[in-house]
Length: 356
Ligand code: C2E
Ligand code: SIN
Ligand code: SIN
Ligand code: FE
Ligand code: FE
Image 1 (cartoon, rainbow, N blue to C red):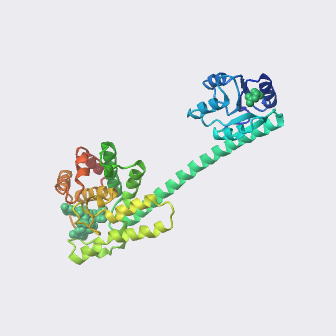
Image 2: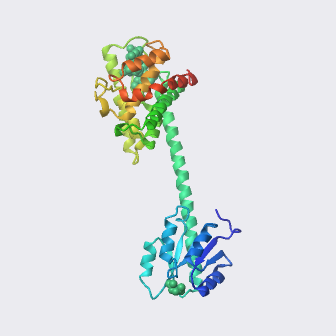
Image 3: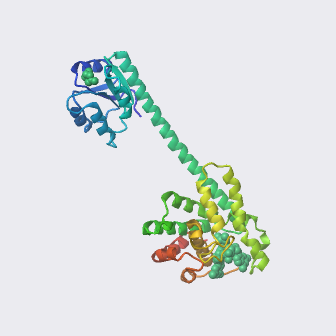
């Protein structure tokens, strides 16, 4: 931000030396004023110094004011500089043209010192105000982001509390999903279905930790059963997908911009669907299953396989990978697994970093 001791810089461009002198005398107490007798002169000045505001005459020999502002607006380094046009009253359409060309304001000639001062002050204040607002928006957005992340972690902890899912499990599955997202983003597959935008990728990675949130609604007797579930128990267990989705639906109702929870919902309800349509709860198949849920299925099963569960002993990384690829095209999206083949060792690295 400019402090009062460093004067802000005004560039005045006019072919009329009398106008330039008058502007300089009017503004120089308050501002650092540079003058240019032509558009060309002003352009070469801009290569050395970026002013805070430009006062620009329209009719000049050589480059006129419109040509000058067009050049300015097509240069990303200069386009933000506010321009006030100096318009001659005999050309009244100049005022409309000035705004069309991107001028911030115009001052009618002949030049009246108090008017020049007031208009210049106002433009510079508006600029500061806008900068402050932009800064505020950036800060608020960061805060909101942090709050979202915090709530997600809280929910993930709640969902893992009862079945001894550790923070390590959450970090592992998030890690595998991140690997899969990155691998797909770098593969640039021609099939648009496999395109993951940056926003979608971030939301998938953030939401992964919520995939089993619905398990909080599953009774201990089933959730923690040391042996195999019977048919009815497994039917009940399967409901963790729809119960989780219902919890998110309640939350989404309250939100206008629900993007990250929408992705969380896809994952929560879809992570036990299978490529061949034999999964649950909906029995949808192939590309009907959202990409987020297809990636989650791979990450979730890999982690279930290498982990000890109340009902099973852990498998080795090699055995787990073998099972994943055996089920490619039946349980899992074969395209994703093929693209991930050379990177699957990263799963093992992640598992070792976040061991229980
Ligand atoms: P989970 O333990 O996290 O397992 C997630 C998924 O990993 C399972 O989804 C399954 O697709 C895969 N998976 C887990 N263990 C094995 C395995 O030994 N071999 C193979 N090939 N795949 C495995 P699924 O089957 O829909 O189960 C969902 C959840 O239901 C499980 O999450 C677990 O919490 C529970 N569950 C499933 N079967 C049993 C069981 O026999 N006993 C108990 N107590 N819980 C079970
Ligand atoms: C002038 O004051 O420079 C003449 C009128 C104009 O250029 O708009
Ligand atoms: C877990 O991931 O440990 C819970 C089981 C599931 O993924 O359904
Ligand atoms: Fe699950
Ligand atoms: Fe899980």
